[in-house]
Length: 144
Image (cartoon, rainbow, N blue to C red; front, side, top):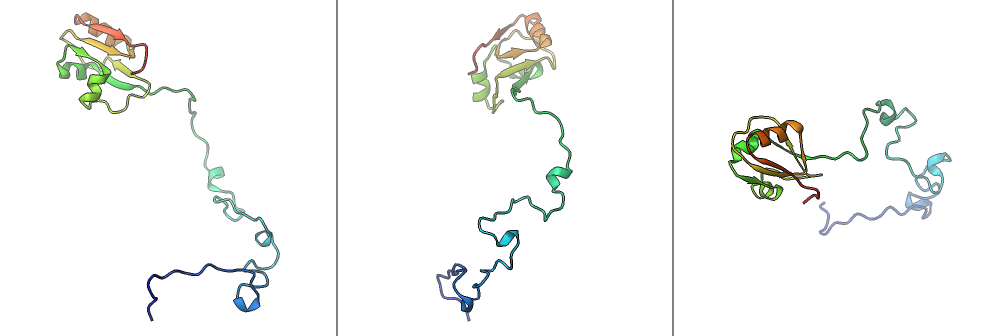
C-alpha cells in the first residue's frame, strides 16, 4: 500500500507511556552518559579512541597579517602593448580578477617599449627594467 500524498512522518514522541513503545527509559537505555539530561556529543567524537584531529600533526605556520598581491610580470606588460597600465585597466580587461592587497609588478621577461606602470609594489628588477626601457614605475600609496 502506498502512502497518501502529502506524506509526512510523525515526530518521535518519547516518554509517553509504555504502550507508545518509547516509554520508561524513553529510548535512552539504562543509565550512562547518553541517558542523562542535557547530553550532547561532539561531532568529532570517535567512541573514546584518539580522534583524527589529534593523530594528524600540525603543519606549517600561518602569518596572521600576510598580504596576498595580484602579480603582473614584464612579459605580460610587453604583450599588452599599451603606454599606460593601471590596476583599473587590468580589471576591465579581465587580466586580474582579485587584487587582494594590491598589484605587484615582477621582473620575469623583457621589456622593450616605454610604459608608465601604476602599481602598489615593484620588485627591484622590474623597476630597473621599466626605467631602462624609458618608462616610469609609479607607486600607488592607497589600494584601489
